[in-house]
Length: 243
Image (cartoon, rainbow, N blue to C red):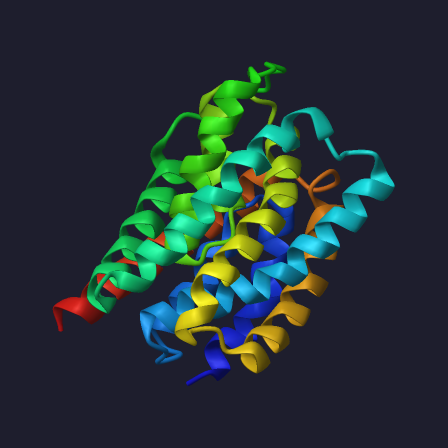
C-alpha cells in the first residue's frame, strides 16, 4: 500500500511549490492507504519535506524571492512551535492525530473551495505578528506532518499578504518547521528515514517544477482541483476512523 504515497510524492511536490496546499496529501496518504501509524506518518512526511525545503531555499535564493525581512520572525516563532508540536503530537493517541489531520485537510479544502478569492495586496506585517503566526503554524504543521505552507499560506492571505509572497514565505519557513519537527519526533523512533528520503527526493523534484509554475500558470484551477482532493482525503480519513 506504500505505492499510493510513492505515486503521490511527485505531484504533492508540484502542488507545494505552486500553491502551497498539497503538503496535506502526503501524511494523509501515509496514514491512510499507506498503513503507517499516524505518528510515524507525521514524522516521516516531515523528514520528506526537508528535501522540498532545501530545494525551495536554493530556488528562491537564485530568483531573489527570499523575503528575508518577513522570513526571520516567522522562522523564529516556527522553530519552538514545531518542536512543541512534535512532542505534543507524539504523546497524543493515534486516532486523535488522524482526526486532527482530517480536520485540517477538510478545513483547508473547504476554505479554498468556498472561501473568498484571494485579494492581491502588499501589506507588511509587523515582526511581532509574524512571530506569533510562526508559533501557531509551526505547532499545527509539526503535529500533522504537513510541512508548513499549507497552514501558513491561508493565514498570510487572510492577513492581507500578497499571494506570491505568501507562497514564497511558505516555502522558506517549511525548512525550519520540518527540521524542528524531526528533532521532536526522532527520540521516539517515529521517523522512517529510508521511506522519507525516497518520498523527499520525489517531492523535491516536483517542488522545482511547482515553483517554476507558480509565476507562469494561473493557480485558480490548480488550487480548485487540489481543494477537491483535500476534501475527499479528509472525508476518507474520517471514514477510516469511524469504520
